[in-house]
Image (cartoon, rainbow, N blue to C red; front, side, top):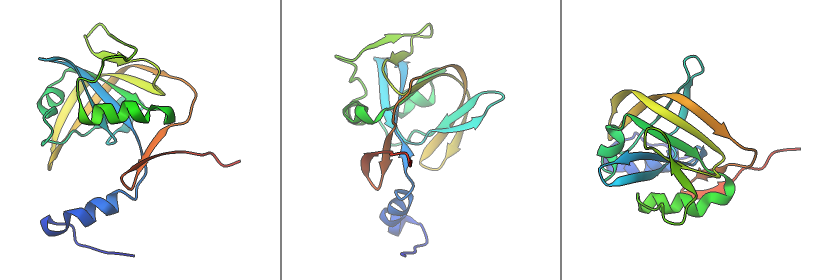
Length: 164
């Protein structure tokens, strides 16, 4: 087992250690000055059932950071294992809605159809978090379907297989 003290000189090692934790893959969407905007994120977590709260953490170095850090409303879309291409699109292009099945909700947030789960959210707090911020939001609507999730671990997409 490798061991490091995280710091500026060994950021890659710290990132590699974090990569051992498998996460789900989400695409977060919001309305912005340039129109519908999306970003792929794996920093999504449930916070509370009552009230229904979730969080996610956009990176401050992202060109899309300001739009998401100041958004009053957004949606978090949990990707199914068959949606790797969709996840990759929004990782590189925040305006990659062309050809997708989507519509705007009452708050003008783009909602992508066909995802594994979707959480429509209202921002309740934004906290500093190093080179990211932590956005806490109340879920106002939750939708889901059956299916297997898209998983990200060790820098790669994968899938989840249940045990018999």
